[in-house]
Length: 427
Ligand code: EPZ
Image 1 (cartoon, protein in one colour):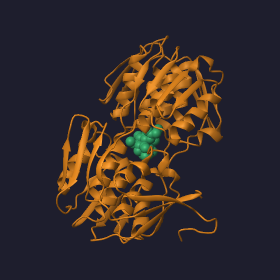
Image 2 (cartoon, protein in one colour; image 1 turned 60 degrees about the vertical axis):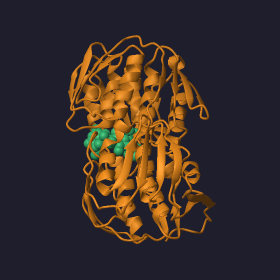
Image 3 (cartoon, protein in one colour; image 1 turned 90 degrees about the vertical axis):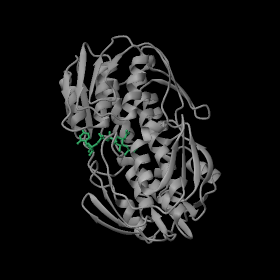
Image 4 (cartoon, helix red, strand yellow; image 1 turned 180 degrees about the horizontal axis):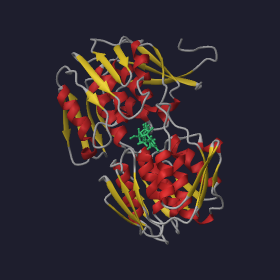
């Protein structure tokens, strides 16, 4: 159990301006890609979050030289001192994106042994499509207990993903970046961080075309030069802040974001009656009336992101009317709703569908975060609720949101930490 809990006293509207940090899911992909370079690389706008620090630990253990200045959000990586292709299970279990070490090490060294990844408990999360891509490029891949090992000189090949997978697309791009010839990824993921990785690989001299469409072509280059690259802002943090502004009936300008990445959420908030206005690199969210209930169905980008389903469902608990939320990406991503029932939410869950009946108020209660975005959803519920909410296991939230408590406090939220006595528990 985490040594602290979050205490949130709800009711205050969030008012003012905030900013979005660099993207978590793009950063873990681009940082992994630096291992492919034959010269030092510098990355800018990286978020100071736990997942980045875990990846740094892993890369240092492989022998890479990694310097990270969290305040400047700048990292330099010199992979030339790399002296291992093995990522032990105790390290790979610490995060989901450790699986990118497979593609990067296979691409750079022709060999990789990586323990099964960890990550949020939101479903089975197999990696069969990642391994299918490596095998298509000529690698011998074995799954020995908790270790995945891959070996071979890679050559470009066609890869047809049986289902759209962000991690599989990115891992295949990493492996293909130095392969002989061209790899064509069919049924590829189109998320903004897939495009960001392609731009980074191209900045190192690789030739990636079609990122952002369902067909990505990667022509490998034996020698990849160094690069200075700025990662894109976090699409999911942007959305979480937008939803928090609406949920507290506030008026917030979110700076440093890319409005074009937010279109599916913006459309849903407008449908609810929330005033959303896009500026060049900022979005303003205001509530001018009560919120209409809406239906959500998560889909791969550019559909409604599964990572925003949980924060959005918190907002829907207090909408006027009944909302239907269908989660199509992961099998078990409704646990936060069970927690919100303790706060007075009226929810019925049947398999991948949640029926949320809007109530006039939520009430503070002790709740427990079960994963990163569930934690974000509970923070939003706490900001909406009458009284004080205690959120146990808030450590999940730090994995993916940089300085989120400070950002919310600066907007007027009453949110603070309190040590958890050994004996206490939310039940
Ligand atoms: C990435 O996870 C993100 N994580 C997730 O964000 C995000 O929810 C997900 O993409 C979808 O957008 C990172 O980028 C580190 P997938 P990933 O491969 O790569 C199945 C967050 O909160 N699948 O697109 O694991 C899989 O089980 C996290 O920031 C296979 O069946 O997602 C899932 O049902 C949570 N075989 C679906 O595909 C495979 O080989 C989508 O998974 C791979 C995936």
